Image (tube, rainbow, N blue to C red; front, side):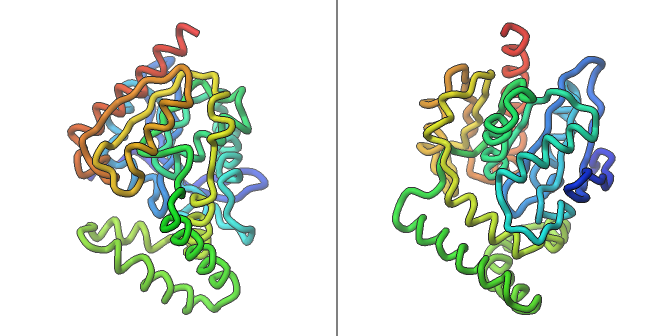
Length: 278
């Protein structure tokens, strides 16, 4: 599996993270790829770097607590992740860019626009939603993560490791390649649990209609993690938006990569073409 060059980079006043970069064509716009919960830049986007790089400059980072992302004693906040991305852009000398967010990364992309509107040329929102927990069962699930996150802040590392193994890795390990498991082994699991809590409380329903940049939404129509009808809410709220449908589940970005990757490229190109007209 060939991956583009990667490196550790220090973001002033925030910490160190890992990024991968693809140099696109001359004068190409920049995409910043934002991965999902419990993933990393590599794990989420390994199928996409080559094709996206034919059209765009590409930067992908590990979010705080994930992989080789920023480590912090503070509680995980999605708003901080959004600020991390803009601070990374500052460090790399990138003025404006198109955030491309997958699942949790889609919440971060939305928040980048909300907190740093002048830096965002457009948005690409993939397998994500404006709200994640609606039913009683979903809310109870995220409340459980809230409790585990609180425990993880005050218990020894061995206990946190045990929670990780019992709650997450046993469930997720089936079918994952060894390199993917190794990617996941680098997580700060206390922050991972806190990130789950944050996702459960995320809600952009009240302000998403204010987004004023071209947006594309990629919907995974067989998704059992984020139901398609919840992804559809993005289309109801956003103004300058188009949709790209993928007949697959939440893992379609690699399980159905021959379908997903061209759809993602089309979604990014659609946003860019619309930015030229605005």
